[in-house]
Image 1 (cartoon, rainbow, N blue to C red):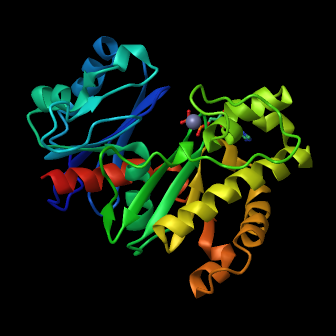
Image 2 (cartoon, helix red, strand yellow):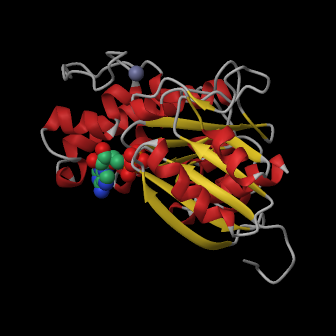
Length: 295
Ligand code: ADP
Ligand code: ZN
């Protein structure tokens, strides 16, 4: 495979709990080919993926992976998917599997860190050095770019599980098995379904659903601003397909912040809290950048 410009080709794997998106492209954001495989067990799915990449002439591959994962260089379990509820993938060394099969450098980070890298390279956060990507989907996760680098630490940010205040009268059981009052437990897709008895897309015409949803998301975003000082917050994931959420989130964000910060970026909320861009390819494009970095 070639893009006719002699630029190095990179592989991208956006590893998700339901599907594995594999793509080949360049670090300037061109996707030349893309396929997807259902996420079964590693024994079933990994050979399909490595076979796909094996004849593409890639110089390196970037993996943006569902978590939690170990991405601390030097750690004994670096490259492992660690405590995931997807039992077949628990304690699986996905980096080694690709390194052994393809013999190329492997870049490795979370799916949401890959997404913010893609958005900052080519999309809604283009050119920014400090930005947050939050996905509100089956779970909630955040990717953080801080001073131009993806934020890690002892693990990686787990901003989906930050604790938030319930609205009075909301007694629905949390969908998070660990926390009664975390964002994921109160606002991810499954918690919407649990609270209202229907899937999110079937509730489009119920304003009370999105009002509560926006209240919870806005609390989280205020906390992200206060702690991480991003220049922009990008929101993606299945639940955010409800575009009516954006003005509601901005309104509640403003109320909750209550004038505390006078920063021009934050005062222009229409361009501070924005939908993801790139047609869902932000993580794949970020993976090309992870691959380039690994090379
Ligand atoms: P994942 O998080 O598994 O990668 P998604 O980001 O697509 O996948 O999120 C899936 C979740 O989003 C599900 O809980 C689903 O009910 C919810 N969802 C998908 N589409 C919509 C929609 N149009 N409106 C509201 N919720 C949606
Ligand atoms: Zn939680």
